[in-house]
Length: 65
Image (cartoon, rainbow, N blue to C red):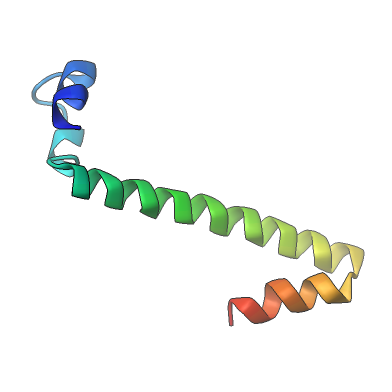
């Protein structure tokens, strides 16, 4: 991963520090992916509350307590 990032951003870019090896790059990927999924689930939860769908409110609300 490091050679690809160096070619894309250059040798002294700040992101090189965070992507030193594949394990670290994978960790950052899963952190960002988890945040995106959390945001999407929060939107679905708010839609279920707005539409008063009790089953979905239960599913989305209880899972993350």
